[in-house]
Amino acid sequence: MTKTLETTRLTLRPMQLEDAERIEELASDYELAKTTLTVPHPYPIGGAKDFIERMGGAKDIVTFAIIDKEKESLIGLISNKLTPAYERGELGYWIGRPYWGQGYGTEAATAVIEHGFTDLKLNKIFAGAYADNPGSWRIMEKVGMSYEGTWKQHAVRFGKYVDLVYYGLLKEDYKK
Image (tube, rainbow, N blue to C red; front, side):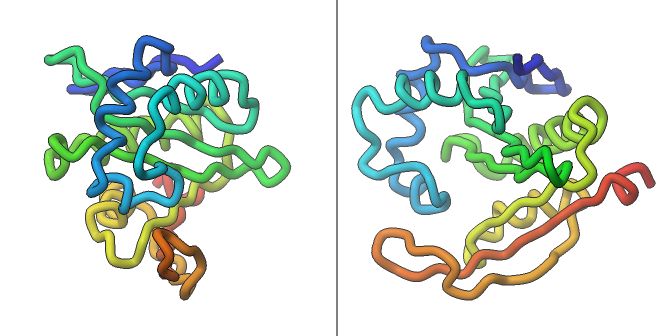
């Protein structure tokens, strides 16, 4: 069971079926979808409900709804995809476009990283982003991750090969 995390401005809690409409609303934005490998575009009607049900039953991924405390509104999602055999997690996130540039991604990522090292006992947390998406990889830098490399034409998105940059953080470096 995913626990609830609190930050200054955010509540990170398990997704609920009631979140489906808001997830679809935010994820339907092409500008958001083109920054991710996994958000479909166009976003299918009913797709968020299926996604929430799938993630709720997943044992290898911890997904949080990012809730703005002041507005009591979902503004994005963040997850840690676990590889227990290697004690590592892959951080993934998206923030709805109206909330870009306000530090919400950094705040949420900081909490999920702490949860990963403290509660999940991970040794490493890493994340990847499109090389041409500095908003995402700057979050990784702000939370203490180090650049580990660029994987050239590692994925295809909307019919184009894309480079992915990877960042990582070891538990021993997090403790410092």
